[in-house]
Amino acid sequence: MQTKGVALDMYQSLKCNEAAIELPQNHVHLWLVDQQEVLKNTSLERYSNLLSHDEHQRMSSFKTPLRRQQYVITRVALRTILSLYMPAKSPLDFEFVTNTYGKPRLVNTPSPLFFNLSHSKHKIVLAFTTSGEVGVDIEYLKLERDVNKIANHSFHKHEWCLSQTETQDTRIQQFYKLWALKEAFIKAQGSGHAIPTNSFYFTGLDSHEPCIKFDNPSTYEPKKCRFRHSFIVEQYSLAIALQQAHNPSLMSVFARNYIPFKSMSSFLPLCS
Image 1 (cartoon, rainbow, N blue to C red):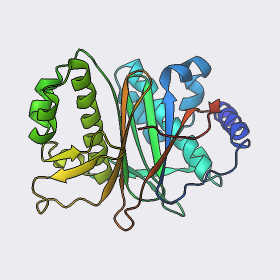
Image 2 (image 1 turned 90 degrees about the horizontal axis):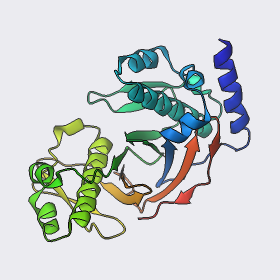
Image 3 (image 1 turned 180 degrees about the vertical axis):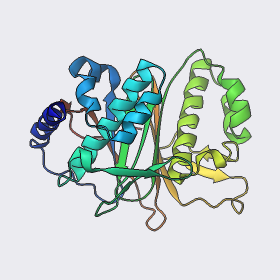
């Protein structure tokens, strides 16, 4: 298809400007995509021509244009970014499978590359690492949300009771910080919501790296994880969880902005 060829040609012109991206051990790369910026700069028709047959079917299942747009942008971002890490492959070459809980992974690749993705409102984030299973979550801070009701049901008593004396703004930030950390951990484990969110809690939320605690560690023994959290522009809470079963070393996280076929910024350290 000619349109597909044009899309690939544009991708190759961007790709030629940068060598294959290296991912050192214990590093996580975050790619941030702004859906509104993408829609201002490119045609979704061009994007959709890079989807597989299964992805086209999945796209058609979404009922709203916004969700279809978000899905297309996410899949094209994933495919083009993977090709930047593995330049011998075209974005169309990658194949994916999912586990019982829906977590995707790559198949037929020469070396392990773990990834995860998340989206909220207009932001999409994709995380990549070679160090182990990774989970990422991004949440838009809805200021009108009844966070107390949700937290009392879904959070551990140790972590939420500490927020009751805070101001409403601080409590909302604390809620979304905890929510993103919990989601990132569950996604890194790849077990869906089989782990109740109120069965574990986080300490050291004001430190550089929060720690996870379990009420009954013998009941569920997760692989060792490192965590990182940041509030990014326009009221978004972002969390990363990285499994490091064999080498629980410090985790370094770098982020960049990305518009497929158009531009990418330099990697910068993620600020906590």
